[in-house]
Length: 196
Length: 198
Image 1 (cartoon, helix red, strand yellow):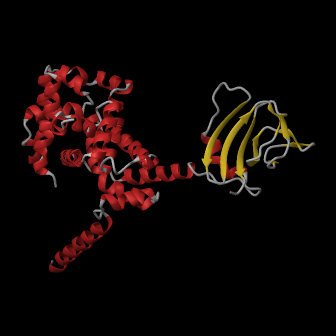
Image 2 (spheres, helix red, strand yellow; image 1 turned 135 degrees about the vertical axis):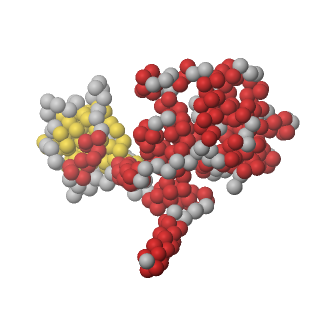
Image 3 (cartoon, rainbow over the protein chains, first blue to last red; image 1 turned 60 degrees about the vertical axis):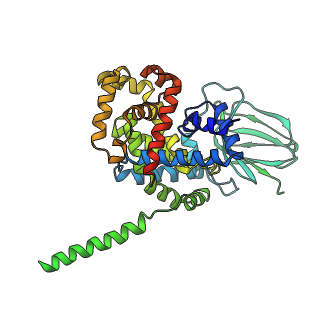
């Protein structure tokens, strides 16, 4: 390929302005990786676009910075819910309980991951009926019941659980549970992985 | 009298030190490092260094400061959320952020909400070319010398792509010139700007 013609074609400007197709973007990135001339040209275009852009500066109103930083702080908290322990309370998860709604229609269960850590996965879930007998070998599953109730059988022993209770299904245990409330049971759940 | 002048000078001096401390210019590399560490200082410095330029561009696209405030907010939240997908080997941080801001602003002017709003005002999408060029010329009055030196033929192509979100094909149709000419005018315009890179 003739590199000078490629540069002259205007494709690099289109790349920087983000107005070319995904395929063309991939081509440009591929060529830029190997060719310093193309890389340099892109950098020059970026700098000229930056000086063009800075001709249009307007200082935003003062209150906006605090507003934006506060929202980011909230998003930061939202993306990292505390890991469920036996000492956790429903209030600890109020933010997620308030903000997340299930869809109108779902079958037995609707689950949404709210936190994904190396050692655990945090989930909010709505369950209409329950789950039949099963076991898992990778993690212990803990529920904190936020709404509704269930009756759970773990290794042959059956017990009832209500709002505010924990249900702990240990790793490798045989377990099942049945929702006993009229409305779906809503839980904050934690899948705690075996330490590596 | 003398005392108040010296007090005045002193307060200016102090506020200058203060503003140097708090709106310090930070290099892109340092900023990227802070943001990768997910630091709040990083986002604060990012705001200090880039909010005016992004806000200016967004305002120019959506033509309303109220809406530009919301879009700037969404833009910073998205920058923060998606920072791990920024790859410095592929381009400058500024370009990446600018494209997030422009996409959000252009999505807005293509939305129903904007179209409803502009029906009540003037329909920007149906303006004739001469209206747009005269509008762009008025816009030029407040601008620094840099943009006045741009060849108007190049400038209008850059303007409608950059601020109106036209694709190169749309720009060619709109200006009734071949696609190749659109591409070369964008290129020539940006080459003209190279002289002014700071």
